[in-house]
Image (cartoon, rainbow, N blue to C red; front, side, top):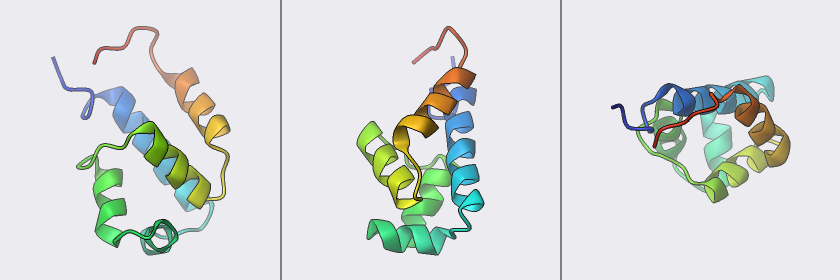
Length: 85
């Protein structure tokens, strides 16, 4: 059984975050500066090397100028009914 970090639902969430960042015209460097983190932090998050929790998710989405509730809702709608963790 694959770990959820590398499973399709987690990758789908990362793709959504990357899409939000790109749609906002924000680079990884820009986002890292807004978060007060090194660029490698953003890279590791987007590549799935570093897993994020819900607080980090909200901080990232807000730093991108988006609403975490809206972004999360979009992600949740795409998830399969049954999830394994």
